[in-house]
Length: 265
Image (cartoon, rainbow, N blue to C red; front, side, top):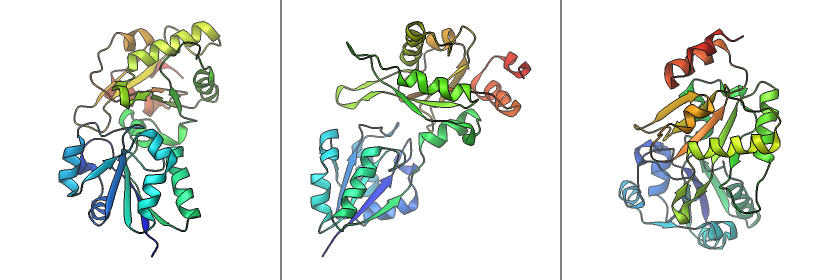
């Protein structure tokens, strides 16, 4: 008898943030797998999750998820869940795993969760349909200085679109890029590439622990963000494009943006 694979999104902060549908699905599974290298719950550890759902969780690393062997083997004959922070289909690897399951004749199901892709826009009061392509800024490595994050942000900005900027996670090293490090990366890219994306007055939105009770939002020029203590991870940035007057008011009210953005066309 062929099994069943359920992809479950947990949301952003605590186990209580998952939907009732997610909780019922997890409690009804024979085995529960998870990965926390693409993201993690801000305010909960594995033990708290296990207590909440009443199941042991097998946490997989990047290689184990990308290979898919462990999950697919279990799903061939059992009802299995694979859970992640945010929404389960926000990562290409998860889409690939679902396709491979379908190729083997394993039925799949999606249980969606709140994702940073929607929560960031909501937190800052920005209109979600005015976002362009999202980008990820990687930790600097010797000999590895990609221009693509900068170029994609610039492309969005030239069209008046906002950009959600995700920040690198090295879960196995317990390293999480901060908003300050990301702004420094962008300033270095501006100096290196010089295409005019950033100047001293460019507004950058920094978000920390969005979706949690400890959420912090700040909007200001690059030096303001560089000098701010945003606290523990997870962090992200939004580079605004052309602001609607209501979006400008939201940034002033919710993220302490300078009031002079209200005077811009």
